[in-house]
Image 1 (cartoon, helix red, strand yellow):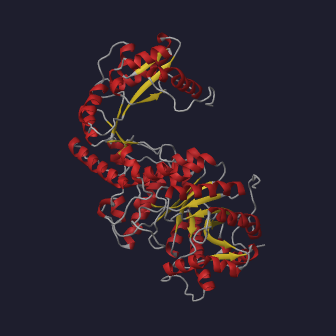
Image 2: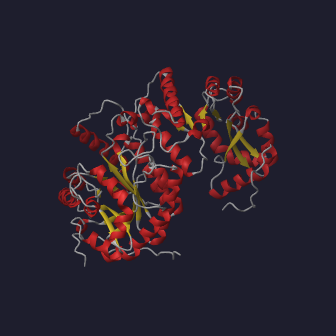
Length: 257
Length: 353
């Protein structure tokens, strides 16, 4: 996602509009109320340390972004966005870490991106999103899922150990309590083993039933580009179809290089 | 010999201001097609301008109905589809940007393109109300404080590109700016700013419709560059000059076909352009080189600025009916004009047919 507090939202709208124009309308624009204070300082931006003030500023930015993409006059001037990108205003997604942000994103008819390291379980955010979504708006719920295909669960866990310990250690203050490596992997939404086992593990993840798009990540437990490509291929051919996904167009195996 | 003032090899770039109204995605793709064609022709690089926002309506030369607000996004497409073209911004209006975000975008583009970025910046964007939309309000609005702010921004940009610590915890630009600091150019309009550009060791981008003649700007740049050499180390001059062309079977045909564009551009700049009454006079005043390849060659060679140029930014806009027409004009310039100006093709070209 693009952390809006670190950006000028008109520049974000411009970049998004140009990319959308060049790509033939393929952009999905994810934003967040993120941004670390030290990075903001380096960028010459002062973030309000009070969370409610920071949130208010984010909402103003998001409002400006949305209206600018719709083609409204920019901030009361006689200027409008160029290139025009009216379709992009309904392709905004917000990163949502809490029940409240799930609810808020829904009321704005935006999509939500729910991650693996949430302050509340992903399904709580997702349920809040559904309960607040206007009736005529199709839900858009993106769920990040870490996947590590391996010959067995045991092999997978061994390959994942270093990454799982690092990530869990980083978020241990607010992640679900976990002691064993297996529990820690579950706490950060890592799925491993054979394609059948991975598919089963994802289906058992409580947020899965709310998900409209799975965002696969193959970074954990892999060390080479080749390994990552093999993982991506396993996802497309053996895992995603087991979750109900149908490819739009069949590709020949081995087409990825 | 063509009597050039410098020993640098003359290089050739395609240049587009890209501010036409109409279907913007279509315009971008047409221009992207022209630039990939330029690489096949053996052109060394390209430059695109940056325009923010637009007024609703059809647009005119003074208030264009289109433009490219995000040159780096556009250049990223070319980074993926070309292998050799230098990718230039001419120029990013620095006062409307966060200098560190510019450094980040440039560094990513440079990493993706294998070090092909030429980062042109400018002190501009003074249309009423524009600065407040993009940067914090409360910055000075008189020319002297604008210049001070611009130089502060340039220093921030250079710091970031040079890998300096950017905050108390020592954060540095990532990806690192690997040599990008040596590839900064400034678009200048005055003698004063051209001198400053040289004194910073930067390259200079000079348009042909200037408030002062391009050769005056170029000479000031060389003086600045001497000062830079005296204080640090000598750097080769980098002087890219916009070269607007319209080839045709003879001058009369060129003038007839290009009439509307010449009149419009002359009207737009009549306050500061050299005064002219005839169509040919106006064409000269806006810096148009037209006619046969020989006539275009002669016209460019006759320019007082030519001896100072290290790069020609060839512009095929304003007068063209189609992109095929533009591609033909560029091809003619590359094959029949540039070699006569002293340009030696460095690249292996693919046959075009």
